[in-house]
Image 1: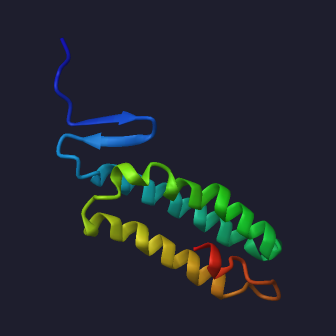
Image 2: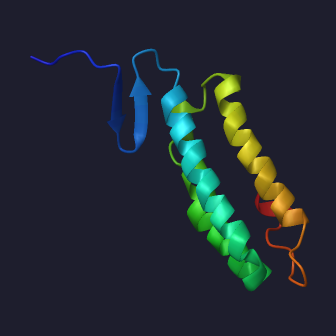
Length: 108
């Protein structure tokens, strides 16, 4: 017999009993924020093409994964992910010292 659970993680998506996805989005925001911060720290060493490739493969892919499942979550929860997107856009607009723009605004 199965016991009721508050949360269950299936294929990387954390489902809770009320399907509000707060825990999933919080964990996703924490993971993506760390990856974006790492990319920002090394972006001055890389050209724009490599930076864009790293962003798409390491950051954007996480944001896109299974978004149809949790995309209907509350706007307050999705706001966390919007802040991360804004940071990525800002990083793309402000180039590092002497470097080319890290991310193009077209990929966001």
